[in-house]
Amino acid sequence: MDLSLTAYVILGWLDERARSGYDIKQVADLSTRHFSAISYGQIYPELKRLTEAGLVEPEDSPTGARQRTVYRLTEPGRRALSEWVSDPTIDACELRDQMLLRLFFSDATGTPEKLGLLRAMRARHQEVAASLGSIEPMVSALAQENGHPMHHEVLNFGIGLHSWCADWCTQLEARLTQGESR
Amino acid sequence: MDLSLTAYVILGWLDERARSGYDIKQVADLSTRHFSAISYGQIYPELKRLTEAGLVEPEDSPTGARQRTVYRLTEPGRRALSEWVSDPTIDACELRDQMLLRLFFSDATGTPEKLGLLRAMRARHQEVAASLGSIEPMVSALAQENGHPMHHEVLNFGIGLHSWCADWCTQLEARLTQGESR
DNA sequence: GCTCACATGTAATCCGTTACATGATTCT
DNA sequence: AGAATCATGTAACGGATTACATGTGAGC
Image 1 (cartoon, each protein chain N blue to C red):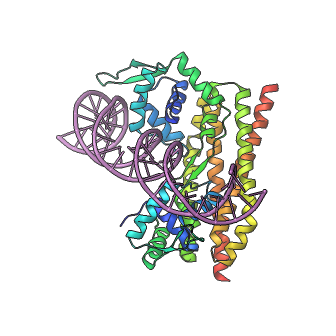
Image 2 (spheres, rainbow over the protein chains, first blue to last red; image 1 turned 180 degrees about the vertical axis):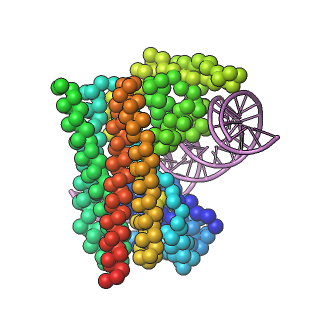
Image 3 (tube, chains in turn green, brown, orange, yellow; image 1 turned 30 degrees about the vertical axis):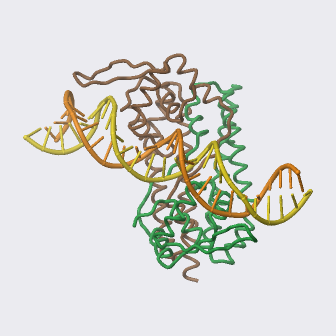
């Protein structure tokens, strides 16, 4: 039984608590968007497959007459998740960033365009850091309560990473501005 | 005429000099692998499309009897590239990293597994930083020669980013080790 | 009554990798 | 002679996004 990456991500979210497909999308968009996006087009079919494989269990949980199905991990599901986490495979990582790519090739234009790009990049990284910072207190509290401290640690990783990126942009902006006036 | 991201990346590499499909793959694997991977299955069909669109021009450049076609930017190609670079659109970025994802969900296991993951992550980031560092002198020299200083700047971004990631891993390792012995 | 958030799903499409196929040249 | 590298391509597959389709409930 080999599962897709998406399958493990779903199992991971269900480890914390029973969730509907909608819930998974909400919480992922809020807290892991910056390193792992997920869409309904993957979630619902994958939940079906995981149910068939016996790794998750559906349970009806309607809100009034509004249909809602939450899923919880089964024992095999929990085992599959912890095996995936413990897997010592070293995978490459990739920072997918079209703006960084544009900056890389920006010698095809002039300094004003480079500066424009850099300022936009810096603003974006600052915004991501700020938006992650705004959920930090909540995640910190939740992480302690339900025994998932790593959610908090990795959130801080994201904040630190994007702050570092913003600083790098600031420094390069300064050097480009100096070079321009020289 | 709207081009794929891959198309622009190819135009970008051809801005520096005329290159074959093989050359593009080589240079991309060496210097932008950590933020933009590319495969032959994309390169060759895309070079064909770009030729049909008149953005690049093929030229036979055999090595003895071994066939080789290099491509160079046409004026419309250069224009398309600089328009893409100057595009003020702000795109989201995503750090695709399966190990970070595993770490995020690693509360499904114990501290030894977390530490194992962290050490592997740190080693990986250190290796990427070192491997980028080893080409830095060459890229620095090339960047000055052929007027592509941004290649060098973005390389330094990569080195700094992966060094920062390695440091973050070291710090979390220390805290987890402390917590373990407490 | 209208709009927004809740909630579930499918189909078309795109993007990208992997595997395969072929052949020449250079180095050991 | 054999292995590694240079060089070009295609086909199949899988993963992921987008657009679409449908309906409920809560608040204004």
